[in-house]
Image (cartoon, rainbow, N blue to C red; front, side):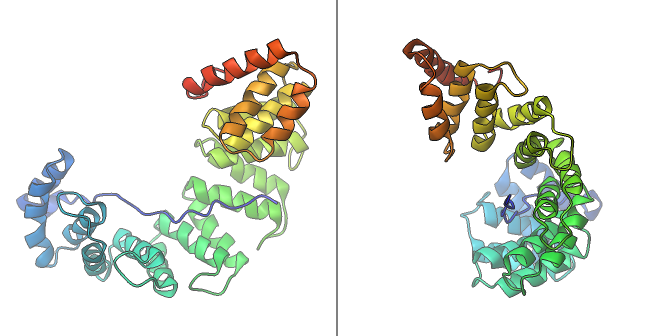
Length: 304
């Protein structure tokens, strides 16, 4: 059973509004060049006068400690003022604070409500987070079908994490009729955006022939992309393909190299792979593989 990526995402995007006047523009320009004190000075009066975008931006600054000491309570208050005026990103970020209990008492129900308000405005990040709370049953009754629907709405906007999670739910038959071909399609969309979980899972689908014709060479290509991003499971699987000579020319040294790297990155299966390989390798080959692993890590796993 493949697992979802359970990451509550916070949006750290600054809102611009050049039509709002010179003071707002001056604050925005100051923020862009890292002059947070000036941005704070220009936006605070506007926010106090009810300017929703300035309110959101102050929320971001207090949330991140930009030009001020980090203050989640102040961030929550400014986000709330903007959220109550219908600013979707502020609604979403206020939901995150409620979910995490930062600056407000932790309240999953309140988080769910603010996420839903933002999601209703087609904010993909909020739709993704609504999907997560339905999947996890936090603040709402657990409902896999509802989770899948919210993930789909975000996925159709190109949101890679939602595409990945929708692929997982199709693969596992959670809230949806199990459909490996649909899982492959959603993994592929996210993988093309560089989503490492999707690259790894797409490799597995080709490796096992689930939803696609089995193709070891294509599986290796996807494992390689994920491995180069430091994904331990893909590094292990790539090592296994080299060990078996599936999709690549059999090469125990490369297999051991990737197994060694996977182990150092926390793969639970790498030790078994290394043990099996070392029964078939000479001491010289093992030493060569260990050196290659160190060199590969130093290169950020690229070109190995």
